[in-house]
Image 1: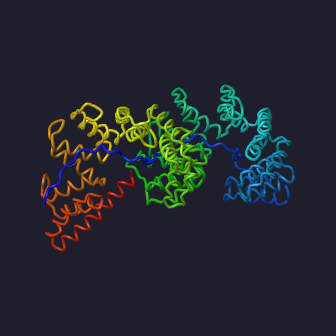
Image 2: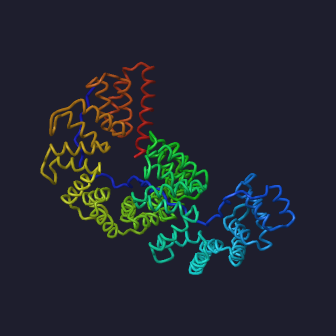
Image 3: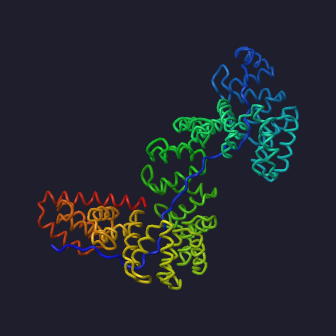
Length: 602
């Protein structure tokens, strides 16, 4: 049997292909922005619930309102929003101001029955006119939610509510002023209003101030921020629980405790705060609580995504797309990626475009895919720039415009994005789609991309250094760059690094290291690595002889295009008993499955 030889790196051009998609982790989200809910009474009603019910059924408006509160906040009875809403409606029919405000809130958010913005506006306006200042703030929210063009009226209502003493209006107006949203930013007044609202017992203001203090990394105010988060959490506000969890996670104002943070994030999620589930999913994915748990992270992110959380939708879409934490499900990923893409997530736009362009389990739509790539590219998403420019140059999904494509790729390469530097080098190396051939420039870009950590670029640069083509030959540097590409996971670099280590090119020979790198290349399905490893395993060269394993390696090398491997495999096969041949076939199937998983995870 003739032993196969390690082969030097080919300088034939690599194919120009779509790069792998990576979705960056999202930041822990800030508190939600929504209607200000009524606060639970500080004390139970003087009368027991049966006595209140008797008076309410007799038609007393205050008693009807108090019964509504009892069912809304579980005071002496179970929580029942529908019953609470019905009693508020009875009291509101008698123009009870607080009942009108509570009914308007429930109608606005759809608590205890369907949302009814028209009825909610009527109830809130009547409540405000009868002296319930907090109702003006929720009326402002209602207008912003349903008639955003009337934002000037909404801001005037907030100012009216502030002037009338409404604490919830101080929170809302203060937040607008802090964020410069709908109003010119006024940090001093915004902070003063938030401080008043927090002191006045508004949990939303307490949670938001806690958020601002944490984000500002203000050590002087750390203890106050923690206390505010605790007060908001104690009030049962989901956003407050989420903020308290963030204090535990970061160790701000206390000893860091990620496990308690996880407990609190879950509690926030159970209370209806999607950020809680999303934050917990990130901890599970990143292994903050121990080993990464992608299965649990995927399930937790799904809970947040189903609540309309956009970054969670992007996370779920990615995990379904890439088989992270469960089976690959690209059709299932489509709706989540679409939600995140439409909300402006450039990472989701890039992945959605890849899904639509390739028609992987969904109907192919290359025109729409190019539209999404263009949006993501405009936002600076690196992989999207590469993908959009590549297909723009070749005229797929869009009329060809090679000039624009070259401008996009070269500009992003100049900005230091390694995948674009590598792509631009390939275009110049190949003269691809009319790109002027310029080998010295291509080699220079391969070097720059390699220096920026690009594995395939390290392999290409090493190959030119070894061959002395376009640059002076430098076997020592070639070996170093093959090693860099190998460490970063490039199978071609791993195979060539194994070769130079075995031969002692560019440094001392290291047969043991060569064997390890050869095995790593083979595990990624590198055809020549499988071929060489098969022959070495049969001969017992540097490893125990194993004809069964050797047959499996050679079988895969043959399937992956190395014709010579077939002759060597048949030689081994002629000497294997039937039982060993069955084992060899099973081994080859296991190896093929492992290689398939490895390639899918790239």
